[in-house]
Length: 95
Image (cartoon, rainbow, N blue to C red):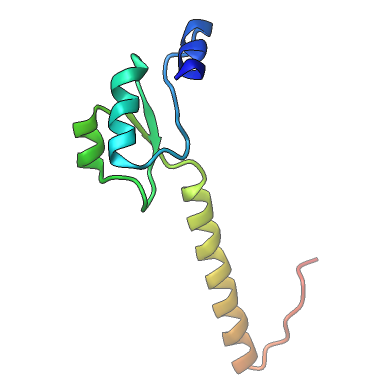
């Protein structure tokens, strides 16, 4: 909490405890922070409704959107490569 208050004194408008997901600890953090709190959405985090009940002000996805998009691209490329092999299409890098 000393770091949170140092950030607030330096002028931040929101604190972001990046890996804080435990409900009870998070409740204490929100109560003690004295500022808006941003939490990263994660399967380990409480639900959005629970976060709202706890007083969390913002939800971030961090790199989740990028990782999800890249997983989709990787899967699609693997599927296309398999289709090309089955169709006996030559696979060549783009030039």
